[in-house]
Image (cartoon, rainbow, N blue to C red; front, side, top):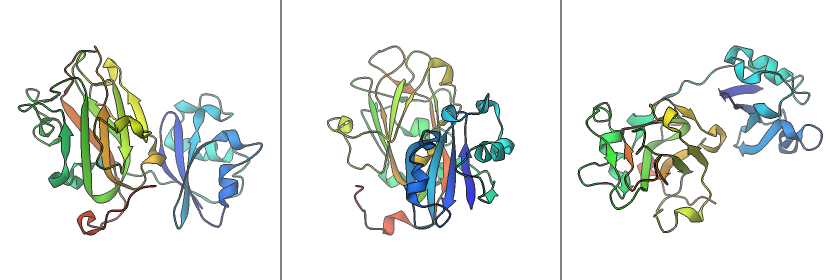
Amino acid sequence: MVSVEATGANATVIRIRRGWLSLKRCRFEGEYSNHFKNDVVCTRSFFTISIDHSLLPIPHLPTLSFSSLPKILHHLPCLPNLPLQFKEAKQVDLLDFVDWTGVECLNQGTSHSLVNALKQGYREDDGLHLESDADEQLLIYIPFTQVVKLHSIAIKGPEEEGPKTVKLFSNREHMGFSNVNDFPPSDTVVFSSDNLEGKPIVLKYVKFQNVRSLTIFIEDNQSGSEITKVQKLVLYGSTVETTDMKGLKKIEDH
């Protein structure tokens, strides 16, 4: 069974139930290996794989809609006979699942804190914003009350002082400015002034399948000035389960 988790302009994320394909075949070594990214996430029941549109032999693929996905998968010789299920996951604002007791933001201004950009009611107020203090960088830590799948991020900011390079880390705790560059980010988004209007940017979905916490490192801004401003920050995705994360013992990622 193959089910579609998400689709965007550049990639489609699918899940394949164990038993249909072995892990070796999921990686598609040999002739068809270039049809897939190396992003393969294994769970007890499924493999999750990201298909890179740019490597598929289908013209004008980014213009295809969700309803055209059967054409995408059946075009792959490695998936000729598997039964397909197409159900587009509903992505919601994850604000209701933020554990506010653990939220942190390093280098935020005293009178321009993260609450202004993240909390509902505040982030809709054009007169409020998050602002950096000593320099242009911000390091934001957001834990969740439930395990979530992170699909996309939306940031609104001014044309010159809005964020530019934004690095996201899944399940990395106790990060600071001194060690943030010691770890590879789960994804990096480079914003232009055109996409700082609050529209969602789709992330590498396969990298954010079991997120207990998210660290966001805003490395610089559009103009290179010493002050970065964020007017609105929204995370979109879906929940994995209803487990209360506060009651779980923390496990270090490997």
